[in-house]
Amino acid sequence: VYRLLEGARLFGSALLLHCGCRPLQTSTSMIRIAALNASSTVEDEHEDTFKSHKTQTKEAQEAEAFALYHKALDLQKHDRFDESSKAYHELLETRLLQEAAPTSDEREGLKHPGLMLKYSTYKNLAQLAAQREDLETAMEFYLEAVMLDSTDVNLWYKIGCVAVRLVRIPLARHAFEE
Image (cartoon, rainbow, N blue to C red):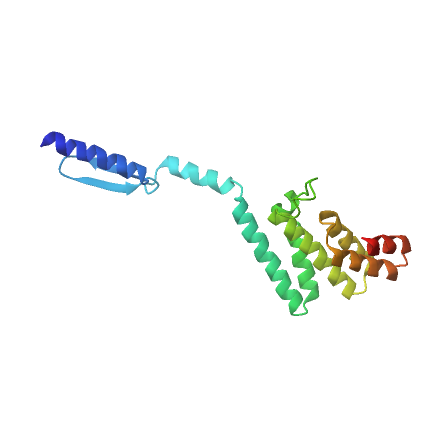
């Protein structure tokens, strides 16, 4: 009977460890359990300070960037263009978009979430600048966007239209031919 109880206790301990728990007190009559991260030791305090200095996960960066993008879109939708532009610029400064760089393989497209957001942000900033009749700034943002994705024919059309208004005929011709 003792061997059976001892085997059950060892199996239970192994199962608890596998589930993220550990036995605090072991005896044949009583087993107390607690989560591995439930104790408050000096080691845990060091881990907490280490975790606070760690960088965000990619998923957290994406969630933060998408939330900021949707905020900027909402501001733009409600004709709060200055605030929207500020939110877009803030988005461009996020780590996710700073690290997003296009690959040389054009077939891959804009599969990286940071690239998609960067592309859309540049297009929206160009749209805002064009609405303010700031055509030079609009052209800069459109060109930034087309450098990320040169397959968007609507973008090329917008570049062509702005280029015509700026009397940049060679650029307009190239844009309309694309």
